[in-house]
Every structure is written in structure tokens, then in C-alpha cells.
Image 1 (cartoon, each protein chain N blue to C red):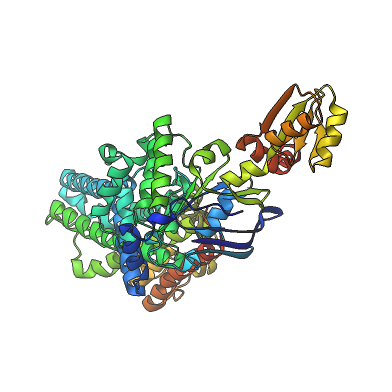
Image 2 (cartoon, each protein chain N blue to C red; image 1 turned 180 degrees about the horizontal axis):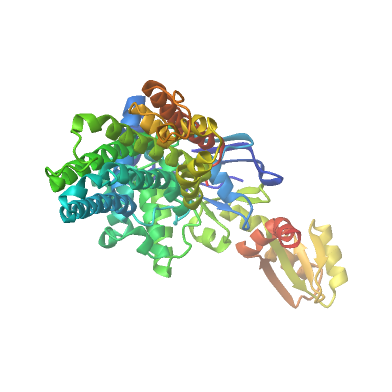
Length: 301
Length: 298
């Protein structure tokens, strides 16, 4: 369980996170989405006690991370695959982390096996590819068998096989009843992995929703073409629909299903030439939600 | 708004969940935490190459002292007996002190800066969010190594050089260990002080180059300016710098007084000199503690 309450983090004059509140529940993969610079990493850094919040709270299992002894047994996190000492071997890196949290060394071999790094365990971290270091970071997150997991852009640098592996891993971790928070700036990634979505922009909450709801809410209506558009508009509006027009001369009908539109047209003796549902892709829905913050960034910086 | 949690059904009967509740519920005592972090820091120090490079450098300087002593012995043998009494040579243990100080200062600096430079600091402080405990454990481990290296290298150099010189009566190579020991022990302590100053500077500056430059400037450059001060300030200021503190801790006067560049009587007692050395450590680690507590981890 992760709880962020009215969290604000300022770096000088810049506001990275601005009054953000959301919850992440166990047993689900929660996607943490936002354009680059939206405040995802900062939020995670505050959750992990690396950054002190300017105001507000960030709690894991009801507690501040900084108060936890042996936190790796409760929370596993991958913030940045490069956050390892280049000169230490993968095995030694994990052994040091395990020792600091009272975790037995036998666990190290186990997680190396699970992430597929057993063969390169003795190689220096600096000699590992980005994809391998990503796996090493995931191994570190899994080291203490924690109930809460956070991953910041974990698919960066992974090949397609690795991306599939991550998706499967996230799903199985959530399936085991763990709390999984997974950040990304790509909706397409979340569509395949996440159950719930926390979408932020400019440090503020844009939406806290599910993948299904987001798609439904951004239903773009039904495109209807008719030689007698004006009369049809009257009939549809009388039935409670909102009707707009699109540049090609068609009608965009919201609030009525395809069957109802067809029946109403037939009932009024009005010919229709096209009836097409227009549902947006999640990617489009996400772009629309975060357009403000993205534009602000592009123009303002 | 809320969707159906797809996996909720599997939650209660999963082994992993039940096991985790047990581990999450157990108490970790403060002493257990400190013991674990100490063990981890000791392991971290041993598992990076830089530590072994620094120790190899110390060993190389010890060998160099033996070579130097062989040269001094050869020089003595080559002199006609009448001129042998005029031979003067620096004591190897004293020559060795500066490189050992630098090496251990570098070890102290790297304890923090190598983690900031590689990003390991974020992982390390995520594993142990009690930053003060990390600082204390890291300082303890580095201090222990610096103490062992400082005393050990001096002792090895002493024994090796004495056995090379044998019974040749060269001044500086004949005094018994009991006479040399206070100076050697104080020199070994100064190595620990520098390691802690390096560690503190590394934690505050977070930059290897910056911290090493600072320590070397303090050790080499500042004393040159202090020497140029008018007396008695050369001895007064010098007496609180590490080189003179080491001499005073062993019961010797500050260098300027010893050379006759400053009036006799200026200087600190051995106890006061040791107290000032301890103060260096307290200030360095205190600054590090404040910096770690106040700043976000980079």
C-alpha cells in the first residue's frame, strides 16, 4: 500500500510535485504515467526517503520510508539502472545490499537466477549492458521479497524479449498480492501491463482511473453521414443525443449507441450513408489528458 | 471509477504474502541495524578495486623505503671510514608518513564520492535510509583500516629498514623502537585523522576531485604559507596543523620552534595536540552528518 497525500516538492523556484495525492493498492499493477518532467521520479524519490518533501506526506505501508529498518524487506525499488558502483560485480553489489538488510546471501543467487543474470554475476557492473543493469536493478528490488515494489521506467534499454519479461514479471508480482507501482511516459506500455492508472502532469494529478474507464471516458462518439443531416440532427437531439459536426460534413453523435441511431434514422425515414463508432486509442486519450502540461513544457522551457 | 482488481482472488492463499507479513512484523533493534550496516560497509570497502589499489600503493611505498635504505647503506659502505660520521639521511618511517597519509585520505574521500559519482549513493541510502548510521559505520570501517595501515606500514618499514642497515651506526637508523615509538604512533594517528577529514570532505563536497584537492591543499600547500608567516605566528598557526600536531603529540616542539625559526615555549602539550587532532575528526564528521541530513540524496 502506497499513499501520497498533498505532496509538494520544490527545487528552488521550480515546483516538481504540486499538491499530489493518490493511493496504490495491493494486488494490482498501478501505472504511474506522465510526460517527461511531470514529477514521477521526484514522487518516487520522496517515497523512498531520498528527497525530503517540501510539504505533504508520502507513506509506504502507513509509514515514512526513512523510519524503516531493513526497508528492503518491505519495499523494493528500481529508480535508475545506473545507480550501482561500476567497479563492483553484480554478485557483490547484491551481497552488500543483502548484508545491510540482514538478508541471507543464499537469496542473492536466487534473485540473480530469477532475473536471468546468473551467468554474468561475477562481471563488474560497469561492464554490463544497460539491459543487464536494468535486470540487476530489478534483482535488487526483489532481494528482500518485499510486498511493495516501485519501478521507474523499467523497460528502458531492454530488448523486446526483455520488455515481455518485465510485463510478465509485473503481472505475476501483482498476482502474488504485492503492490506494484510502475512509471512510464508511454501509454502503450501501460495498456498491456497496468490495471489502474495514476496520470500526472506538471506535478499535479490529472486522473486516477483504470485502463478500461479511461478508454470509455474518451469515447469520441459515432460518426454519421446522411444526405439529410439537418433533419437527422433534430431527430437525434430530440432523443437526447449531443450532435456535433466534423470537418468532412459528417455528424458526431454522443450519448446514443449505433443501433439506436440506426433505428431512429429508419423511424424518421432518413437515409444514412455511414455509421461508424469512433473510439480513441488509449494513447490518444492520454495525450489529450496531458496535452496542457506537455505544451507548457515545450513552449515554456 | 474503480475497476475490478483482477488478481484479488488469488491474494489470501498465496504463500509469499503470508511469509512477508511475518518478516514485516518483526522488530529490528538499533544494535542489530548498526551491526548489519557495519558488516555491509566492511563488505563494500573490500569489494571495490580502488581499495586494493590504494593499499597496493602503500605497499609500494614501503618497498621504496627499503630500496632507499639499501641505497643509504651502500652509501655508508662506500664512504671512507673518516667521513662516515658526516652521513645524514631522512628516517624512512618519516618519509613514508606523507604518502600513507595521502593514500588513506584518498580512501576516505572515495568512501562517499565513489558512490555519488556512480549513482550507488541512491541505492545505498535506499537500502539504509538512516543516513547517520551509514556515516558512522562507514567512518568506523575506514578509520579501522587507516589505523591498521598507518601503524602497520610504519612498523613494517621500521623493521625492514633496521634489518637492512644492521649495525652500521648511521644517525636516525640506530635509535631503539621504544624511543621511536611515540613519533611513529602519533604518525599513525595522523593517518586516521586525514582519512576522516577526507571522508568528511567527500561527503560534503560529493566530488572526488574537489575533496582530494582540498585535502592535499591542506596537507601540502597551507603549511608552506604558514612557514612564511612572521614569528611567532609561524609556530602558533603551525602548531594546530596536522604535521606539527603529530610532532607535538609525540612530545616534540612545532617544526618552526625545532628549527629555531620561532621562540621556544610555543606549542601544545601531547594531550592538547591529541585533543586538537580529535577535534579535526569531530568537525569533519559533524559537517558530513549535517550535509547528509539536510540535503536530498543525489
